[in-house]
Image (cartoon, rainbow, N blue to C red):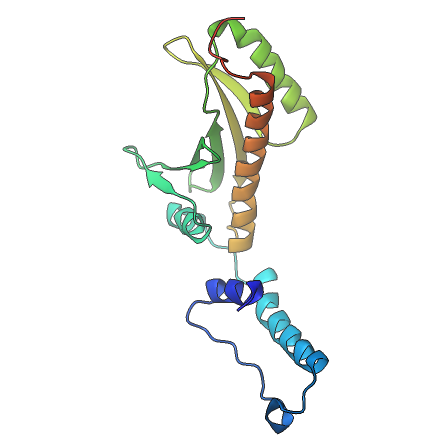
Length: 197
C-alpha cells in the first residue's frame, strides 16, 4: 500500500475504502483506466480530510496529546499537569490559558544557557528577531542561578474552537518557528556558549 493508502488508514482507522467494481471484473481495464479509478478513489477519501468539514471544537490537553501520538512525538505530563515534549532536542510546553482555556500557547526553551555577561547581546538578538518575524515571540529570562535562558512563544486565541487540521497547523507553527529561532542561536553561539565573552 502506498503513502496515500497509509495516510487514509491513519485518518480513518478501521475504515476500508472499496473502489466500485470495474465493468467485466476489471480484466478489461488498461493501466491508465486503473490509475484513474484509484486516483478518483483517493481524491474522494483524502479530499474529506483536507476540507475536514468537521466543526471546530475546544482545544484540550487530550487533543494535543492525541496529535502528539498521531505524529509519533514523545510527550509527558509534568507534576503541575502541564503537557510537554521534545522537538529536535529542545523542550516545548503546550499551555492553555484564558477563562475558558481558549488561548493555546506553544512555548519552547533553548536547550543551552548563556552567561549573564551575554544578556545585553542576546536581548538585542531577540529584539531583532521580533522586529523581523511574526513568529515566534523571542525573549530571554535570567534564572535564579544567574544563567540566561532564551524562550520562544507562539500564542493563538481559539475562542471559537479549532478543527483537527487547524490545530495541527498551529502546533507545527509553534514547534517549527521555535526551532528556527533556536537554530539561529546555535549558529550565533557555538559551544561553549555558557562562558563569558
